[in-house]
Image (cartoon, rainbow, N blue to C red; front, top):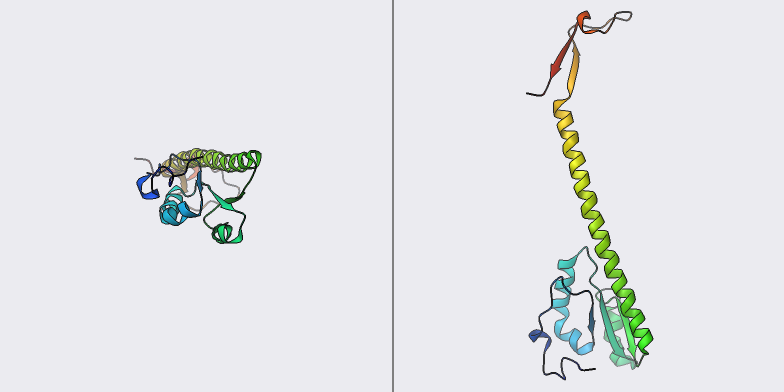
Length: 157
């Protein structure tokens, strides 16, 4: 597997696909050089989940940076060496989390649009509600029919 360093690239020379990536995988070197950009992408994606997977060696010094960031800016950590199955499982879990986040955002948008439509309908009904106002006080035993002293007023133009 080639890294950005092996290809002669730096994190600054790679454009992050704002909103188009589903997952970012970083090592200590990439994290140090792109931490602020990744934080910015995550903040701009909110409330969507933009998962970041860290890869670190098992030696304490290599993994220490990831454990400090785990839960705050990094969603999961894979310590190397690891098996292909473990790596694929972790990536799959984070991608599933991303898909659930996208689905939830779609449902939220749809629900918000429906609530806005209901709110507009209620406002229209409220504005056009016909109000029956008594022209004089009603007395028990009297009929409440229109000829008995009730007047109809409408707020609609």
